[in-house]
Amino acid sequence: MKDCEVIRRVLKDKLSELEGRVGRIAEDVRRASGPLPADSVEQVSQRANDEVLDGLSEGARAEIGQINAALDRMERGDYGLCKECGEDIRVERLEAVPYAEFCIDCAE
Image 1 (cartoon, rainbow, N blue to C red):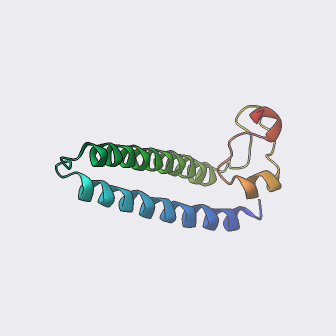
Image 2 (tube, rainbow, N blue to C red; image 1 turned 90 degrees about the horizontal axis):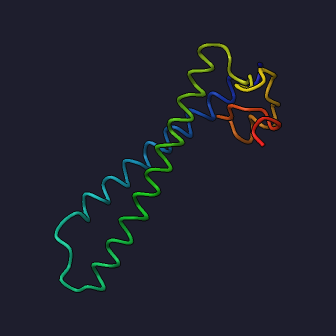
């Protein structure tokens, strides 16, 4: 696939961005992990904020896993092949979702 190098670059850029995001979230959580304020409204707010940060971090880590799997498929030479039917995944789909494992038909 001639577009593979372009997509590899996109994946690596996205990977770097996500790793930075996870690091910043971890810093925010560490900074906020001190004793909770005595005010119950502030406690509720802090806990809600922590839950949002946990969700963002979890989502970023999941996407990092998908990107690493796509980069591994590139190394093995089976990137762009549907894991279900074995057919080529359309370039347009890979451009939109570069870590896609399935063609559009099998993904539905």
